[in-house]
Structure formats: structure tokens, C-alpha cells
Amino acid sequence: MFSIEVISNDLRWIAAIYEQPSEGDKYLEELISFGHKPKVVEITNISTFPVYAIERMGEESPANYFEYLSESEYLQLIEYQQKNRSINDNYEAYFTVFFFQDAHFQHPYENSLMGALDHVHVSNYYLDGESANLSLNDTYIDRLVNNYDIEALFNLFEKLKNSSDEEAKTNLADGLVSLYAQMDYDHACGKLTTEGINSLLPILERAELLYDKPIDDCFSRAYLIMLEESVKNNAPEEEIKKFMEKAIEVNESIMHTSPEEQQDAYKQLAMVFETILEHKPSANYLEQAYLNIRKSIATAPTNGDWELYLKSLVSD
Image (cartoon, rainbow, N blue to C red; front, side, top):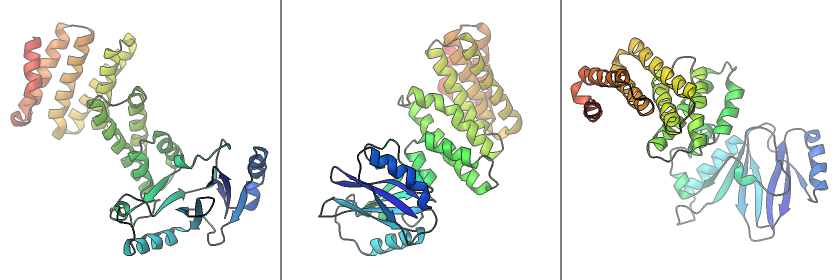
């Protein structure tokens, strides 16, 4: 295993990491052509990925240095650090860990982009967490979800979609659905960006493919969000109609396949018709909104959305 390190602005950074010497030859020439003075480091204690690059701060120049560990060595380091704590501040890092699952060559070459790599800061707070004793491979998807790294999740989907590893596919699907749930909450709070809104359906479509089974309950809410946004933004008529029809279709499917979800499905249908009323007032849409919220409440009155029911009465 080999690493290419570069020093700039009194800091050392990892430009590349790879298995075979020949893999880095051309990249090394490109770095030199940009005026860097790269150093090739042979990592003799590791023969295969993953690689854990431990960054520590020193007192000499450059101000930092790296040591490279295998997964077992990393977990041993974590265990040692949990037993040997020397920092009182719970959030001050003992070191930073950069996780490489496969070969990495940074582009562009000019300056360090290590902050964009998958990494964790190991502090007392981290050492006390539930995930501290797990490999970074085991918690990789959780970090991507927490960082809203949709691009990396989609790249992982491309790698796994045709895989026979059902556990890995399910883990990724769970992560995608978890991300969707966070974004749904953000939308309800008015914090989700347009880019995030436009990512909702692609996230769920990939999760459904990985599960290889319908996730209509998620699509029910997502199609309603897309309908609301289309109406709010005065989208073309065909777009509004498409999301309305999809929202109706998925909730009707839920009613047939998941009787226990009928109350929520009727409520979602009522909200669909309430939303479309804002775009195109219609006695039929008004009646459908009223009838569906009545059916929703009738299935379990104590859990019914009476506020939406009263709103439909006022609209009437």
C-alpha cells in the first residue's frame, strides 16, 4: 500500500492512496508539474483496503503528521485511547481519522481537500459514543446520512444495486429512508432547500430498488410534498397533474395492501385534494377532501385529524 503526501502552508496532506506502485506514477508526475514536492510513503503494515489514516498534530514543521493503520489496528487504538484519556475538554480531538475504502487520488491538485474526505474527530465525546467501538466501515452510511451527503450515497447505490450482498443493500436502503425522514422533517420546518426537495423522489426510488419491495408509506408523503411545491411554484399543469395522480395512486394502493394504514392513507388523500383546491377550486375536489377526512376519522376517531376535518367544513 502506498500514500502520496504533500506539504503546503505548513500542513501535510494526503493527495493519494493506492495499492500498487505503478498506480501512482502518472499522478505523481502531475503533482510535480503543479509545483508540489510530493513524497511517496510505503505503508508496509497494510496490504489491502480499508486504510485508516490517523492525523496527529505535532510541535515541529509541518504541524501535523500521519500514521496508517489497518482496521484491527484502528480498533486497538480506540480501545487504548478509551482507557488512556489525557484531555479534559470533551470536544477537543486526540486525533482525526480519515477513512479510505478504496484507492483515492485527489483532483484538483492545487490545495488540500482533505476536509471533504470521510473522517471523524476522536474526542472524549466520540469515545463515549455507541459507535466508537465499531469500524468506520460499519458506521459509514450513518455518517453520510448525518452529513446529508446524497452524492456519496447515490455513488454507493451504483456499486451495490446489482450486488448479491442483501445485507449491504438493506443497510443502504435503511440509510436512504432515514435521510428521507430527516429531509421530510426539514421540509415541515421550512428548512429544506429546493435541491433537497428535488432529491426526495430519487432517494426513495433507490431505496425501493434496494429493498425490492414497495415503500408506499414513504412515497405517499413525498408525492404530497412534490404536489404542494408544484402548486406553490405555479408549475406547469402537467406536472401538478402528475404528482396529484401519483399521490392518489399510492394512497389507494396502501388501502388495499395495508389495512392498518388506512386512517393515514385517507388523511393523505384529503390533504392531496386540499392542496389541489388551492390550484384549481372545484366542488368535486372539495367533496373528496371532506369525504376522505371523514373516512380517516371514522377508522379511529380518537386518533383522527379533527383539525383537518374542521378545515374542510370551513372550506365547505
